[in-house]
Amino acid sequence: MEDGEANEWVAAFRAWVWKPDSVRIRGISTARLEIYPGGFAVRPRASLQRWSGWPVVEYRWPAVVIETLIPLGGPGLLFEMSGRLARCVVRRDADRVRGALARAGLAMIEVRRWGWEASRVVPAHVLGEHAGDVPRAVRRAPATIAMRRPTL
Image 1 (spheres, rainbow, N blue to C red):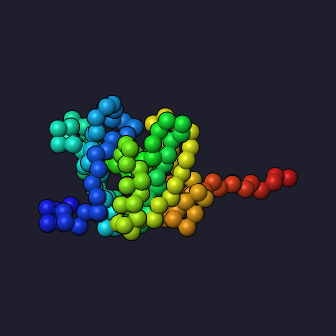
Image 2: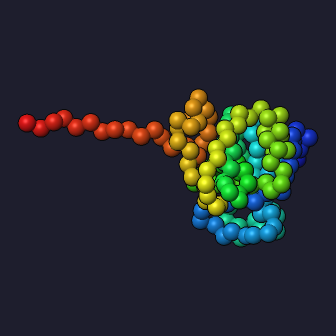
Image 3: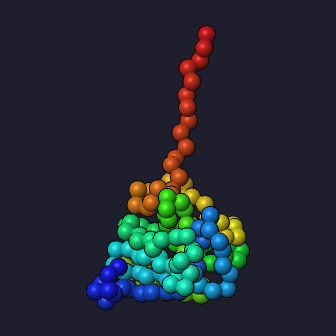
């Protein structure tokens, strides 16, 4: 987002990003989540950007999956980073994040599942009418059954 667009922000939060092939840092935020009309951006903290190995991500899809890992994990936004599934968690401000996403005009799909920190793709039937409204890395295509002809 350009400096001139900063006045369009709905909200900004300190966040923690989980990406499968990157170093995980505990205890401090690793990113800034900026929610604005029609989407959000996930930016690595300036002090971590040089070695974090991940770029600024601009999310412009009409829907977002909020995955809550139970029993201990908080809700996180699923998104695509460099073609892979990633997750952005805002600690202690889940209701404010949901409110900001609603004000930004994003449809929210809530998913709850057991887990620690690794996210999983969401089946298309869970996404329902929003299956095409989230990035490919977030959704799993419906299973297809291969039919074979009987041999005589």
